[in-house]
Image (tube, rainbow, N blue to C red):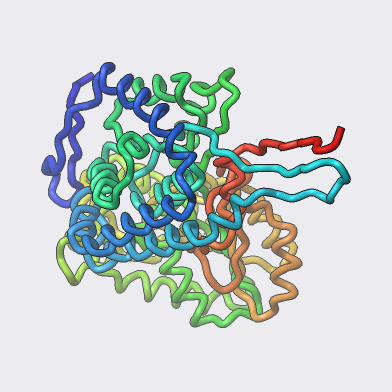
Length: 463
């Protein structure tokens, strides 16, 4: 394997970033520095941790435009929407900083004469965060800031597609006054990523990525008795109930399915529509999707950029072509998108009907600009189809009946249940998945439970 990391931009196929991979010596040095720095950092008052993290977030906000341009070149998101990445980072980071003191406070137990008893949440130690390219800051901030606020040291390995994000974090934390060694990054090969997971200095691994990547993490960590958090993607469904606001459902589900060219772990990939609304919903979706402007993400008029790699585009093209050969109907004329080009990452959006769960496009994660739509006759049928998946990250219902939505949501195998919205993380709520979408929890006060361990204090004061 080459000793150089090369990031090929989907914009034009050029090499946008080139970096040397970390050497064995630099990996060992980073691990040792993290262990020493963490022992001091955990004694740092939480108010000081918060001040440093807030200053780092300030730095991101001040550098928003430059960061947005880097995102566009590295992974292809249109420049018009790329700045929202920093806005989301700020929202999540500020929330987790603000709730940290309460979330990390000692847990009291009933008084007992002659004793002082309480449970303290203590940091795990050194956390290793492995972050993906599709939302390079939004996914990584979920783990990085809470880990630091909890008193852990962090070593970040970012995707080879978005390596500048790791360097930006280091820049912002350094400017904010973070003590040396508390936050570090490493550009790593797959083999060295496994080596770090197995290192005795690592106490927790937070991974966001594919199911196969999650399997690698679990296998590498096996026998180490450390915590592992896995966020592995989804095949997220939506149900448009008979009482839904049709126009709102069309607009928001098209956005939920096609934002970021469909490259979202919690993006909508399959839609079930009550037969009373089906025809109008399908027509509205096809019309709206046909209006996307596919092109270079550097062009201000573009609102649908390329997918990250040609291989990713060909994977989606394969799903679509196979579904059509099995009887599905494609409603969007790909030839009307001048930028669409087989053999390139520029991929026209597609809406498929006459689909069923025997087709890969309805069961296998697509991670691209395509959605399948099926007609259902009842809540029961929708529930059955929504649960018919190996994944369970998010699911959504469009309805004007909150009681019915809650009742249906109780029966859906998912980590988050939405009503009249989708593809969004509220930092006040736990972000978690079931089945092949992973395990563990980030965000909300509950997210701190996975980055700390309970330590009981049992003091006898009278003899």
